[in-house]
Length: 391
Image (cartoon, rainbow, N blue to C red; front, side, top):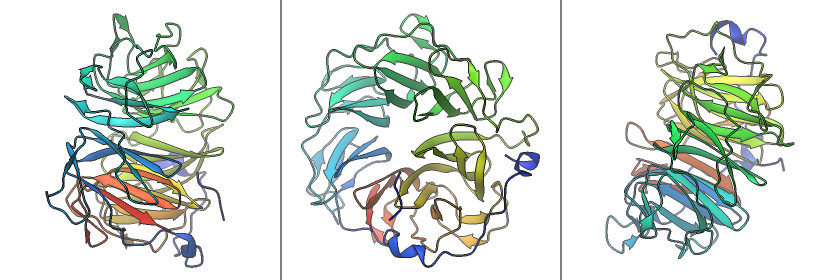
């Protein structure tokens, strides 16, 4: 069993990825219909699997039993957790209000939540907070300066915590779109200041913890052209080599990166902007392993046992090319698609979710793929805003 885990001229050196269906590999892929499980009464924006627990964040206010359209609701404001093996709704209840949760990341026995919220557990905690992973109680020792706008990305690394978002200030300090905090106290690192010109939505670190890859809406990084993605030194914030950063992109199609997931030295990205990309990079160099395109935004992704699953707002897969809204569809894939992790080969797995935007969040682990979004039906099964597919 395998491990879990841009346009135009920039692609000339990329090898052609086969479009053939990989039927042998399908034996380990997740089922095409979700199991019966709890649902959310509003949009799920982020998911995280730790062991056999899945944590959800978003703009919902309650969790609903399987099959329910309203009866049996259990209050869960903005965040909830379930046992993937038993299906039980857990007591974890941070009670996040006055804004949406956009990211959840684990560190030891605690979790960091980021978003646009202002209240957690009945007290003021704006945009970022640390909570206990069993109870949801706020960790009071973590007191970061308040970001003035939404936090979209949080990545812990030892004693450090890297965050990205739409903010331009942290407390009284100017910090535009990316910052580094002390993971225990929340104290701001004043010297780490990579310069980007727009929002950061994703941050990934290499195995050695020496380089941070930033993804987002930006067009420049430290004064040079890095459209949507680039890498910096984790100590100084200075630019480090990243192969894919040409200014020759078709810039009339704005390219952004919304989410990353990793497996060893491979970094997978969800690319958006007038169509979407399914991306695989070498995290140490930025070399593009492969790219595939779809005809709508790609919003999240997850890796499980040799397959990488992507979700978004698309309706069709366009092949081993950069995606766009008008690309020639080679295979129908309604908001969900799966590729072979190593080669990028398209898989036959294709459950659909309804609604025009459909997918916003994905996570993988414990033999399950979980998805979240605006949908009310997944794989033909009535399931509101959250679904779980098992291997």
